[in-house]
Image 1 (tube, rainbow, N blue to C red):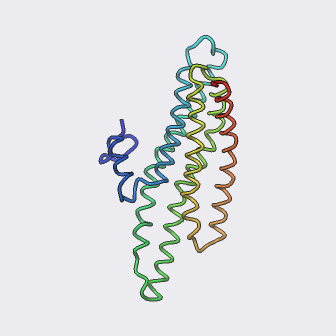
Image 2: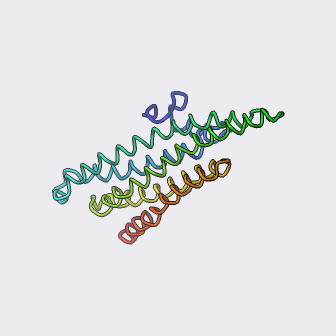
Image 3: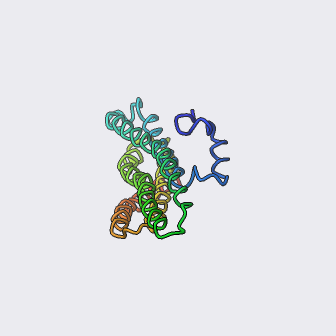
Length: 213
């Protein structure tokens, strides 16, 4: 099962957590935020699965099926971001160790670092975009999915909040070091825009809480 989500060396969740606990550079915050987003998507998709085929929800079944397809597509992209984040971080970790003993070495290190920082910012930026795009689907299943699984819709919203906030931090830690401040600010502006979904996810979570308490 885990082979789809992780390398063969990390073929169980225990191995993944062991690597996460260690000094290894990956997995790290970016990969974990993608994984958390994938879990959020999975919970929303599960609500869809528990809704389809029930007479009570026949009127919304076609939309639920379409929503499930959209959710699983986003989940697939989030899984790909786990690997992309790890692949982008490796060159950056090497770039930090480049020598800077001469003006030429300093210039070369700055050039390599700038390129690596841009590459490292892209996966968590994409994660933010995907989690923002997941919002309408989570809202729909929370409002229209099986009431027996409404708590899972609320859990989906909670995990989505964690995922997008974590991904945002992993963008900002790279943009803060970029020499091209105009480029960095453009990336930060996109993240700020995506983070505007957090209050809406909060509303979903709170509405589920009101139902259950």
